[in-house]
Length: 102
Ligand code: FES
Image (cartoon, rainbow, N blue to C red; front, side):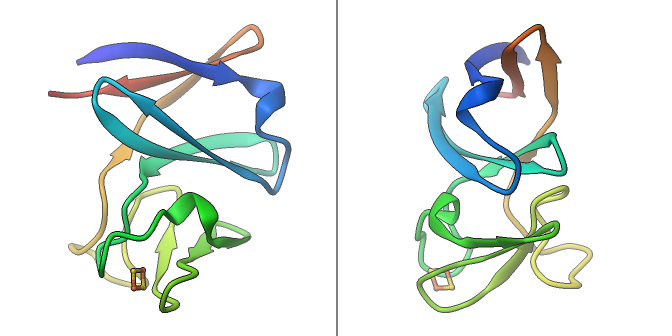
């Protein structure tokens, strides 16, 4: 596990998303009500970038075909088992830090 500095907090305004790449992983960051969440930036369906989807509350809708993911968990719709990876996020000062596993 590695804690990685991925960007400044101000680069992800509330209600917005951002794509970053760290430790060989493509990660989508989402700011929901001033809290930042990180999930794998590749849709479970055909791999479209989830960072480009529409964010409504905690749900991002993939712009390719409309699959919906909970950005707080990475889970697909109401599924308890299907989804993309999610990564713990910490804020340190004005920086966003993401814990990335192997
Ligand atoms: S690639 Fe995301 S719904 Fe098809």
